[in-house]
Image 1 (tube, rainbow, N blue to C red):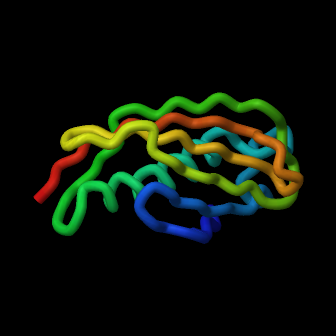
Image 2: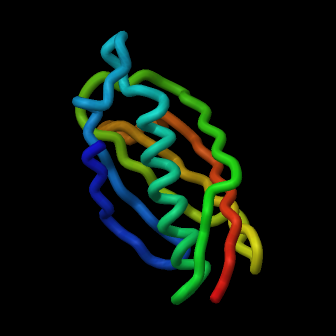
Length: 114
């Protein structure tokens, strides 16, 4: 997938991936690639929330694809909507090289602290 993590700290995770190599047959970014980027960023955020020795697993992922992307890179920014002792929900906003939102994802993870 070619995902690069740019920033990974409590309350904020960002990363990007190339569109090239992640196309669907029509030559645009595959929706599943958006889902992989979103779940990668959200899972990192959930693992940080779970703390040392903790665990986090995805429960639900929803992606709304707003616009097509056929080249360049997409960048995702993950922020928490709610983090509790047993679950955490994150919004992941994915944008193209011009800063236009291309996808909005919501990820809920189960949290198990050590």
